[in-house]
Image (tube, rainbow, N blue to C red):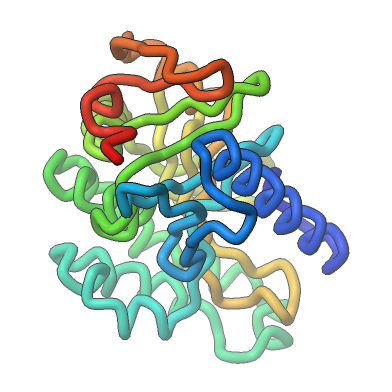
Length: 255
């Protein structure tokens, strides 16, 4: 699971280690050695024998898709090419003062400023082509990663990246968050909904000096699994530990 708000550095280490352990289990399940190839900076948790990359997810509640600072959106051409999405994400960060202390002293002012770029992001994501491009960049590093592979009830479920992006973009309702109580503000997040449930949330992380001025994109595991189940992809049992879905049936295992 993703470390929760207020989690300790030890929690974060345990989360990362659990992810490494699950990636190793998948590597072994498809016949790789314990020193399998990977490139986690590029979201390539496991690179299979065909040279294809897998983003491996497990977790109990949430998956952290990304957690990026301002420099990432400035320097990553993939975000800059998303028809203004990269710039709007920078505007979200720039809604907050440079110093954490200044934010703590006047949170309301920053939250009011944040509403404008968050609303603009929501409006941009009504365009399905742009939403698909954002999901492909965020989840699959712009197409460098080929599969979303999910550990579910001791079975690795392997989905082809294009299937995931297309299905999510087709069914997502993209809205802004609403204030739920006194002192809260609307439009602090962009929420990706399916059947009334929050599948993904794009938000600012400002809960500590070490995690200040960062944009976080999380997905909620169970609603995401229900979305993929509702897609009714064709399935194939590749092995007792690995099941293929949709176009992964044709593309996976070519070695």
